Length: 169
Image 1: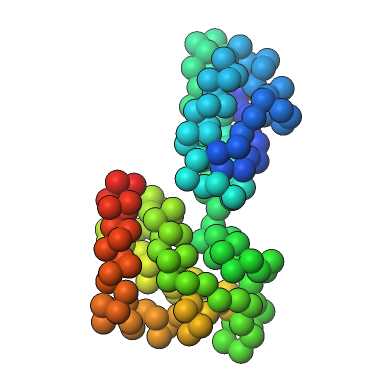
Image 2: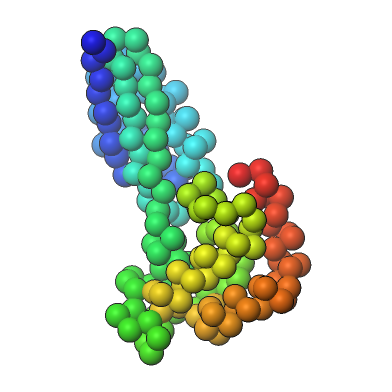
């Protein structure tokens, strides 16, 4: 039976380092710690500015490892984009901030692997719905109105600009 060690740490996207907690926790696994840190930074680079949970599962006998990322939630990404600390307790009457459609689009792209949709437009509408539930406005309007504009093609030019990133993700 293989001996397994799981190292779990919070890291800022693209900024994992040999410093505690990650470096010392990995050093006693027998792995090339610099190589593991470099791989984590490549995997998390697109999440610069966000804190992620990284789980490194190490087979101590074979010296193999697998890295799993726990991405920030849509809510935490929205709050971060709006520079707000917490969701509104009354999102229909108390707004906590405003973000742009580009912020929404970037969040949709970051969360692509977790969203159950094939198109960027559908993913944007999902993020807009979340923005509404936390008490944000988008483009200084109710996200429900912005969803209607997405359906009418008002933001098609912006969406087209990001579709290549969506298709690569």
